[in-house]
Length: 448
Ligand code: S3P
Image (cartoon, rainbow, N blue to C red):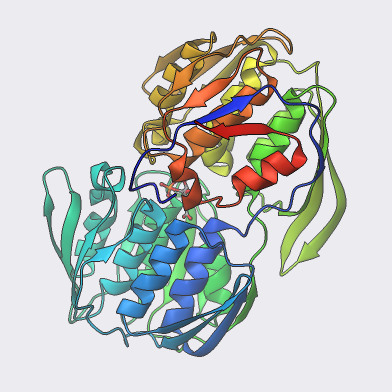
């Protein structure tokens, strides 16, 4: 299942109670960054728990094309022998980032201040997504770009031979844009400053510090100001990738809507820039608890226990929480269908430029399954039908978007009738063990 080949329709049938332990894969954001920063350090970075989904494997191939040695030891254990900041070779092939916006945008950033020319492409979803949000700030460093109309891939970037550091206020709440600028700043002499008005996931900042870069963060009137001193020698690291809260969202939400369920999802990072969904579910009245709270690698971690919750209520999700749960709105909208009353999700314009237009994709699929959805440019609402009355029975398009496909598979577990997606193959981009993991808990999934 590659997401680039023959569509694989999948159906989810009403499940018996879900129970057991769901060991979800490594964090996608941290996996990409481990490979990229490993390639920019000098020496061997050892990574365990790497997410071996298509998105991350494409980034591993790209780092090899830039001259780093990347070794797969099996079982999620990888080594990257880096070439150092400024040490990238010019790839002799087009860099294909598949479905991954994070992959392409971070890699564009890390090459833009080296004197090499690189052409990027991706699948139909990625080639439709906006890249100007990254190439605009990269131009300030001196990089040049030729792409398709509207700043779309395929696109060639000519890296700056004599980069100048920049000061950049990120105009959209995007960790990818912030990270691309910081990675470009690594090979620019002097200080690069990035300011974000809303805090987005901070893995790049934490990991850059871990790799030995000089990086400071200050809260200012303009926003969160990050200052990076360029041209450091990055030191190789030993990285244990934590499990992905965005993947944990699927078994957690499935348990909440499937009668009789009790599921433990161990070792999930609760970094405040990522954990918004779990607090939102608690606000809705979900029986979701954090057990064995601890700190691992400087991050708060807990085992999540989710039990069937028949008394959830619709809420207005605080818009200032959006960045910390941006990838989780699709599956939240499924849970909202099983709550009583309306769930309002505002301040979420970014959902329109993800792997798909996620408001449109979910609204169509929810309606096909009997749920009422209203939407505007930067908001949408779901009218909950209560725990027992979601009809299901619909067929939904996944639009090459893994999270849309998984969300509708979750919906089928609690709905009265089976829910089908036209193509489940994109699931391998982020959660290659989704099907065996969910069926191991008691889900009934079939490939039609
Ligand atoms: C990511 C940032 C987010 C998120 C994506 C991963 C990252 O994208 O949706 O899945 O690793 O930096 P945006 O930067 O577009 O918000």
